[in-house]
Length: 177
Image: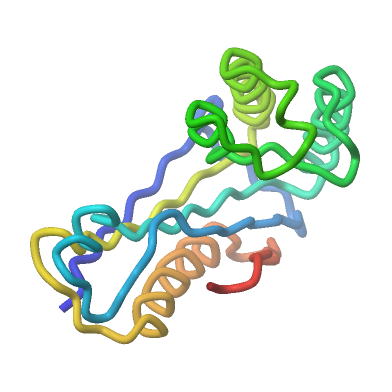
């Protein structure tokens, strides 16, 4: 049995404006890990499987990308690299997935994250959609594909509801684990 929960949060001024034939981009990624038959140690270290979806209008996304390029230059992040949320914890432990991170402090990364988030929430089209599966209190015996299907369907239904009647959304995701 999947212990599923969906939660939707609007940001910005909270108002929706109708813009005929507006295009949206939805970026989706997971946090956590899922195992069909997890042992107690796995469930303790991975109590949740969360899929985050971030939606921007195409115009807001172009603006956001330009702002992030400027921010990356300011922070000395090479064009072919990115800062990941997990980098903060890895740097705290003295581990570096990439050479350029060795010159970054925890405070530098915190400042970078704060500036990225501030630029994102300034976009009126920004919307977050989170789906959560809690696996700690009970084992989930669903196949991983079924859990992923649940998360993607929930997000896509909400995106489609918002896209009606004259809007279009493209969902962009990384390779699945």
